[in-house]
Amino acid sequence: MKTPEEKNGMATFEKKLAPFLSRNLNTKIEKRGKLHYVTNAWNVKTISFVLKPDSQSDLIAALNSLVLPPRFTALYHLDTNTMEYIFTLVDRNSSYLSRQFEFMIEGKSYYCRFEDASERLLLLSKLFRPAGEEIGDDRNLMLLHMYANPHLAKISGLEKDFFAEKKPVSFFVGEFEAFDEEKIVEISKHLNFFMQYYDRKTTYTIIHPPKSGEPEPVKQLQFVEADFPKKISTQRQNPLLLDLALAANEADTRLKFIYYYQILEYAAFYYIDDNVKRDLLRIINTPDIFSNPDEYIPKILDTVSESSQDVEAKIEKIIKTNCTPEFVWRELQQNIPYFSKRQEFEGGFMLEPIISEDTTIKSFSEGWYSRTAATLRNALRSIRNALVHGREKRFGPVIAPTRGNDRKIDPWLPVIRRIAEQVIIFGRVT
Image: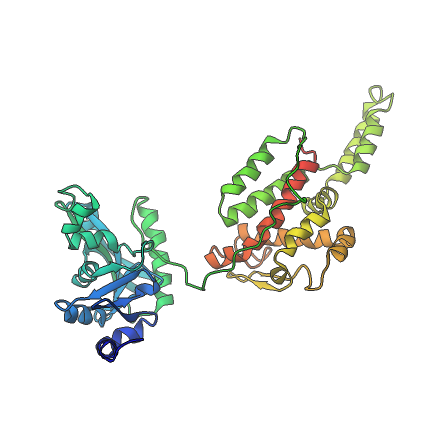
């Protein structure tokens, strides 16, 4: 419980910093020991600024003139409507220091330049204090903090002259009309694209994804059988499919899905229906085939032509014939609330539920050949198309490359992985 003295101190700082706190809603005033701190800056738990007696007024004045936008490693200066993207220390003769340009989009000009970090940023860097045992996202403040507090260089083990020929530099973008986060995100994305187009080694603005709370971890089956087998016997597998499966293990969410789907596409390309195989064998084993090639070549071509089904139809067949529905169900069962609800993705793509909340392993397995495998195939194909195709009329909405969308794809990864692995093992793709 806070003492009356502590409450009065908190109230005083909250009053003095009212303009700042009203614009930076997640930021708070806290007391640790004898000093007060501004905490949760940029909505990052581990970033705080100490309100030392000899710097309180300066820090308060600086903060009241700023927005610390959580989506950016940057400050927004309210008095000049300028974004200051926090960069780093550079050599005093760095080529960045001569780079300034006008960026025009839809008739509106923004003046962009690399130059010395602002006094406000240097003050924040000096009074920056990591909160907690570890500092992860420091919004590029840690190195600037050591620059502003030279005695820390020795403690950190840096070379004696490390800071001698360096200076803190920021990237400034001016002429915004007001602080509008979505507008600034849009301009920043355009700037990143064009700056990297003209200079492959350029720095770029850091845009952080919006915070949406910690996602629940995707549940995943550990053992597909009751336990790990005592003996595994297999034939030699297709090397490309093995490489795709192993690469998927190390890839990010989107690439994982695409690699696993490539396994299905590859297997489908070489898939030949048993009836077609039988017809081809009957033709090529005909005793007079070498005597009458003109008669049998058209028959072979007709038979092969009949087998040239749509790739997606072949994928459905290899799923039906090579995958065990009970094993696929066990993966789906881990995340029934997800698979039984409609999912909407950024980019406009929507995915209908593939099961209901009361689906059972019995109903799932019994419908495998009539509808279940086809439903799975359709869902996998739709996700794949939305991931790799642009917004074209023939393909429809897309899955935008955002962290939120990755989280929505994650529950599918154990499912498509199990399907792809079974196709490798039982599909006999050589």
